[in-house]
Length: 526
Image 1 (tube, one colour):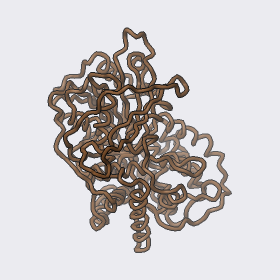
Image 2 (cartoon, rainbow, N blue to C red):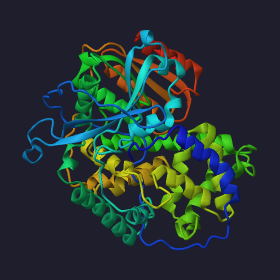
Image 3 (cartoon, rainbow, N blue to C red):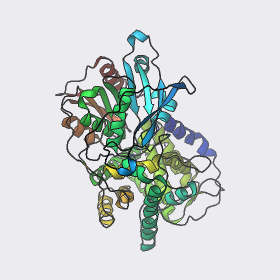
Image 4 (cartoon, rainbow, N blue to C red):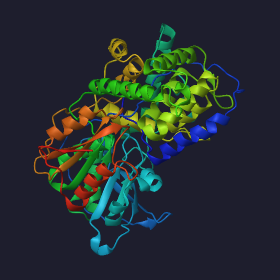
């Protein structure tokens, strides 16, 4: 399982709408069978890096900002496709980096520079995040900094990875999350091999140059182009791995780094999949305990304990694997989409848990409409049947950055996770199969990130984060020579946002504006 999308405000709106719209969904949609058999695509919680190579930061360039609506300014920065200059096919070629900026809202005399933001993924669009979810950033920070978002190479509008058509992705995601017989194994294997082959066919040589190390070097070029002597950066989820990679390569170029929802860069992909299986299992346990007998949870009102909620969920899961639920129009909810629709809600306790309770109640009544709406949001499916490029970019980056179980090792690995985590373990255990068949081999460096010479770096970790488990944040803060840990005792994925914990907001805002971080020896708790 690998780290995927987190849409913050947009996701919260969708989860809330499920509570309203799904109740009115028709139960008369015709059920149908979807040929094939699914797997869980790269989901939220992981990242990686290739072996660093000597780098030359691009010379400072003049960015040509133009208005692009809503008070935003947009620009493009061209960066070398091959920073190492060892790939003859890439010699002299560049790749565009799409940018967006909102100028600081406060007095010019109080402006502190640019705050570069990455929302995670890998594969998420930083431009879309800043445009759609700017309110995530607290007002006090928006007053002091220009907020700058960027689409990492291969994502959004930065020459995105291109692999499958919308109908092909529909077929892929309709496969079961793990096989239960030889026919399903063959279908999953064929589809997974086909994904890698299609990405190579349509994306070409660029597929070799999408690692996190490449993006970190792009970030340093952007720092120069913005005219910043030192970089101020806020990275969520996968963005913490990107930030840690930058810190390893350019420790003296840092002003302040906030790494929220942190990942341990020394873990293999295999270890991260196992950690994420435990993270989502724990999040579902917490949901089940909250849901049982709770009037706010439609699915759990008839149950008296978390165990009863979990048993009913597994029974429903089994039923859907045998007979897909009618969704919307001719679309149906298979076991793969059922899983995706569940996982997305575990990122956000406030709106996600009630939405899951409603969606599961409707599923018990025979309608998969709400789960389909949730899975579409998670997978980036648009109303016209196309998909945004995030999931394909997610695979491209993760497969360059990490090593995962081989195809031969995957069944036993998934079975071992199923014994530990009976609800999600087997499905998440199979999610690394993309990388087992990926056409570009990874170059992995699992050395701890020390970032000697960097100023204090603030690592934020949530105790019950399903996608980036708390242990990863602890490990990263300990590795960094100047790392300091801010622990948020809570549920959900990441902690620093305008509508979240006032305690977390206060610690982070103070650090970004004054450079005063909690003591490394004690950290801070919220």
